[in-house]
Length: 113
Image 1 (cartoon, one colour):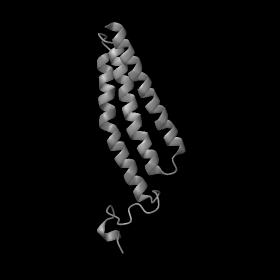
Image 2 (image 1 turned 135 degrees about the horizontal axis):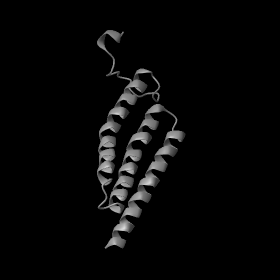
Image 3 (image 1 turned 60 degrees about the horizontal axis):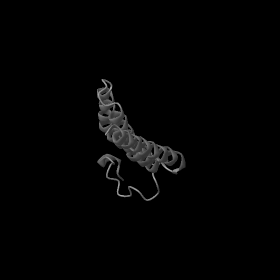
Image 4 (image 1 turned 120 degrees about the vertical axis):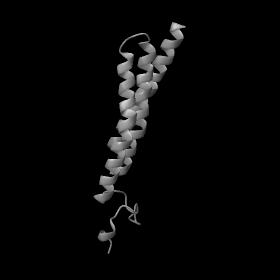
């Protein structure tokens, strides 16, 4: 049973590391802020959670498991807020892709012409 759990932990850690690597490549390669924001949040968070799950499985019975769970919960709670804030700033700074936000839902009524 221990060998099976070790294999599951190794697979989770490797998949998480692969997702985190693809997120890093996306951050470097994508052309604009909104695309980079997507790469910085979705695969990175899922990759981190997979690595933490693998570490929890591997460290079963250790006291440090609760710290890993707290790290995962903190990441899951803060990543959407950070992505939303970065997206709003990119929109307001007009650094998004051409054609996005033509309607201008985020503008205040006094800013419209």
